[in-house]
Structure formats: C-alpha cells, structure tokens
Length: 274
Image (tube, rainbow, N blue to C red; front, side):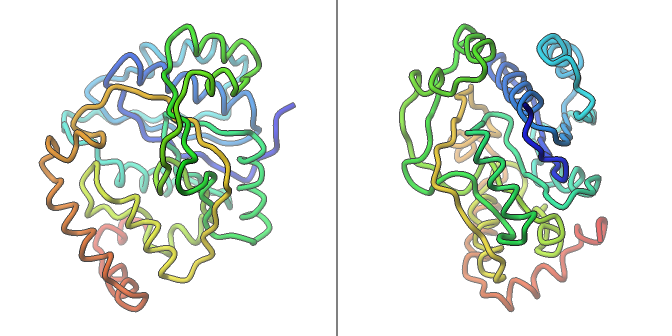
C-alpha cells in the first residue's frame, strides 16, 4: 500500500549525461511512484530530452499509473547545469505544504519519507534532513542487474546495501521543507552557478535564520554515477564558476542572522518569484 504524502511535492532537476545517470533516474522515479501517494515535478534542462526518448517508457512499463508525475523540458545548450535556478522555477509551481528538494540519485527507507513529511505537516520542523550527519551514506555500486533485482524484489534495500560501502553524509541530496519557510528563507541562491557549496550555505542559512532544522539518523542510499564538470569533485577543477561560488560561500558563511536577512532582502532573483 502506498504511503500518504499527498500534501507534498518532490522537485527533481535532471540532466542525463550518462547511461548510469539514466538508470538512476528510472530507479528513483519508479521507487517514489510505487511507494507514495504524492506529487512529483521533474524538470530536464538540456539540448534534447533524454527523458522522453529513453526514460518515460521504462517508467510506464514498471508503474501502471504515473499521473502523479509532471514533466517539464527546457532546451538549453549551456554546459553549466544551473540547479539552483531550476529548483526555484519548480518551487514556484508547487502548492503543497511540503516541498522536497530531491536529487535523482538517492533513496532511503519509506518510513523516513513518512516521518520527515509528518514532522513538517504537524509543524514540529521547518526543514528535515532525512539522513544522519557523518557515516550515514551507503554508496551503491549500481549495475543494470542489481537495479533490476531491486525493482523486481519489492524494493528490498538490502539488495543495494550488499553492493555498497559506507561513506560520510553532509548537507546535500534531499531536504524536506515547509514550502512557506523555503520561500521566506530565500529559496535557492541563484548567485551560485551550478555545482557549488550551495549545500553548505543552505544549511547554514536556514539554521542561522532561526528555523527549526532537524535530522533523522538513518542511512541514505546513493546510487553512484559518472561525474562530469557539474558534479563534485570534478567541479573543483573543471567548473568555470567554482572560484566564484566558493568565494560567495565564504562570504555568506560569516553572516549572522541580521546580515543574512539584509542580503536576501536585496536579491534580484527573488523578485521573479515573490
């Protein structure tokens, strides 16, 4: 039986640069659609739509009903994947109380999705990180065979666990937000250009602004994938905005609550949405 996450929207930005990334998108969307009564927005920004040509049909073959999924394509030849801007554009389309900033390569226990959702619905939390900080990441060496077994054996996460190794988890991948708080707190900072320390800044900002930011000490399963210029750690040497992004984070990291409020109240990008 699907778990009730009706007042929730997962916003998932994608660019499918490799076969393993495509496999991950299929796996994650099949998992979400099969396990939860919820809403999902996927926005693909690229030169051509890999989702329409290769992904959608695979999901339809596995999931009989994908009506919960809204897909948007934006044609772009920009080699920089502007994740922050894309997330904000999707956030502006949502109406549910809970919005989940969601990476296309991760999953975790169904009960943790439900608990994260509950905490925000019942106003216990403003932001929830659904995994622990520290050695709470299973990095999964995914293959076509492994993923096929996982999908066809009722999403038994032990199948993934048995082909993984433990690594540290920080502040990226997934955050459950109260939608009002997400917007009031400045949304995603579009001054970061693509792959950046935005994960650190987001956590620092919502904590410093005084919102109730919580964590659930459970494991997150990260399906490994090829890494180009838009993925860490390659972005440190290949991304043209890395130095700009890092300098921005170093500035914002030193800001206290009043300084952050002043900074975000003067951001031009927010005027598009507020």
